[in-house]
Amino acid sequence: MNSRVRELREKLGWSQGELAEQLEVSRQTVNAIETGKYDPSLPLAFRIARLFGKSIETIFLPDHD
Amino acid sequence: MTSSFFELSPALKRYYRRSALPFAAWALLMFVRQPLLAQSDAVAGKVALALLPLLALGWICWEYTRFLRECDELERRIEQLAMAWSVGTSLLLATAVLLLHDVDAVRWSGVEVGAGLLVLQCSTYMVVRWWLHWRYQ
Image (cartoon, rainbow over all chains, first blue to last red):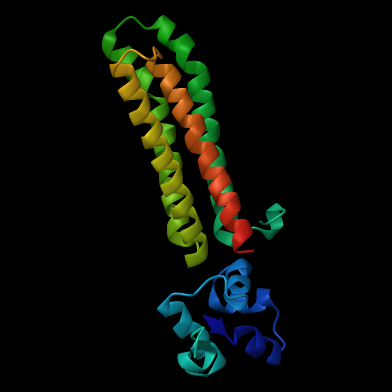
């Protein structure tokens, strides 16, 4: 799955650590989501979407769209 | 993989801090167990002393499950996969030893098998955990 998490985070000028703190996850988790190595659970995806003020489907995109 | 204590997740830091005491208790109880057993004559006393380290082991397990509840989803996934692999390999080895024991192919004592299983379980857990941390880095 592709995600726009890095793009949105950088737009807000946040570091991975700052985003991790707001989401209450480790920096490793944020990095793994940004690099596409880990797909977040639905509750975490909702938290990310809420934090960026966007819908899940505009942040997380299927590999072959 | 994280390279220093300060880069560890908050849940893992808490777990390391909280588990130091039960691990120390485990080591101490294992150390004092034999001399105390030698002094005890009653069977009930021997049984209680022999099983005493289990209290510390239970405490360690409780701290570990507490850590699993507190860590984030990726960390939990890594821990659960590492545990699944280590338990799976130990089960395979234990079954292999039992089957070989049945045909008298091996003559290992319970202590030898137990020690071997412990080493295998811990090393598998560490290797799988390290590999998964590296993969998700």
